[in-house]
Image (cartoon, rainbow, N blue to C red; front, side, top):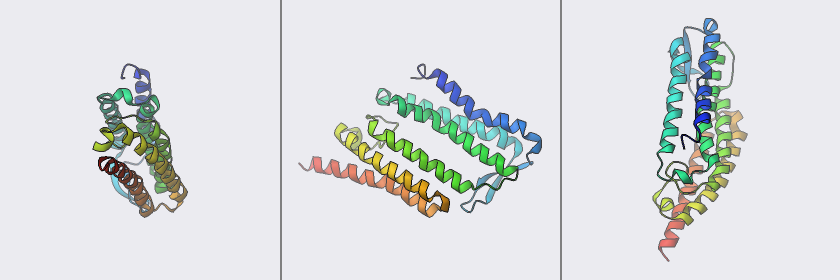
Length: 212
C-alpha cells in the first residue's frame, strides 16, 4: 500500500509542512508569543513561542499524519480499505494543518477571525464526507465501526455502516447549519448521537441474530 501511494504520501506530507514556509515569510511580522490554543469563547488560553508555532506545530502534525498512514498500512485487512477511504486518511491531516495554521497566523497578525465557527464548519464537512464513504467500506481494523459483532459478521458490518453513513451525513449537515452559533453544547451532543445510535443499531442486529 505504501508503494502504491508513495507519491501521494510525499505530496500530502509536503502540504502538511507548507505552514512552515508561510511562517518564515511572515516571521518578522509575527509576535514572539503566539496563541496556539483557544477556549470555547474564541479567546486564547494557551501560548507558544514563535519558533514552536512555526516549526514545532507542523512537525507534530506531520508525525500524526505519518502515524495514521503507518497504522492503516499495518491493518491485517488493509486490502478491504477502499482507495477513497485511504485517500481520506491521506488528506485529512494535511488539510487540517493548513486550516489550523492559517487560523493561528491570522490571529497572531491581528485578524479577528471566528475560530470556533471555522473549526466546527470544517468538522461538519468532514463528517459529511466520511458519511458518504462509510457504506462503501468493507471489514477492516482501521476505518469504520470496529466492534466485535461487526468484525465477526460481514452482514452486520454492511448494514451498520450503511446506517451509520446516513446518520453521519445528517449529523454533519446539522453541525454545518449550527456552526454559526459556535456552541460546543450543540456540536458534542450531535457527535455523540452519530456514534451511539449506529452502535445501538449494530448491537440490536447482533442480538436479533443470536436470539434466532
